[in-house]
Image (cartoon, rainbow, N blue to C red):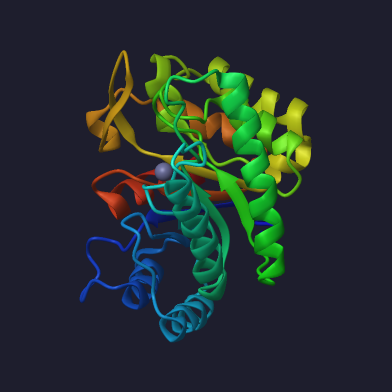
Length: 278
Ligand SMILES: [Zn+2]
């Protein structure tokens, strides 16, 4: 990631008010709205052609929009079925390849599921897979951050500790912090003091530098004892985004803020406007 000097606010996918609604037009729409970033969504497993990807990169540059990419939902680096594992690897490699070609600086994805196995064993397995993937991505000559996401359910690999430890243990891996997921896992992490403990843990585990190149997701969220249920608009949720952004500003955190609320650009703008007023 090219270091951002500040927080860059953007949408998870094409803003709803883009017309016609495609990735190239999205960049112009984001600029009109006064947003700075977008996450390209490969979540359904479809990728652009190479020419389209290059076009996206050039329009992004023209409009000064910074990009990240989200890999397909169907990824499990802990899959027992060799075919499923192979396809999961392929989907991450494609996300890096087409993301890189489109000018994205960082990719994120949900790394896998526990399948009721020993968490220590799963951690080791996913670490090994990520280690290999980082090597493969380098071989493709793609320069992009590889960031497994903090996930919203205990059945998925990706607690705060797992994501930070794997970023420390595996060279080339960095975290993607999803604040809504972190909150949904337990109902905690919704006060200034708790947000600050997250930043302190990041600082202790990965160094101050990690705070200068965050890739984060945010949305309102509905959750149960099992974790994430669905994303909500910020004002329909209990998420204390104001305290979060005060803590982020106090600590000089920089990087991508990708808004995943149903009302994508509206909430992204609420966050950006609030942050700038602090
Ligand atoms: Zn995600």
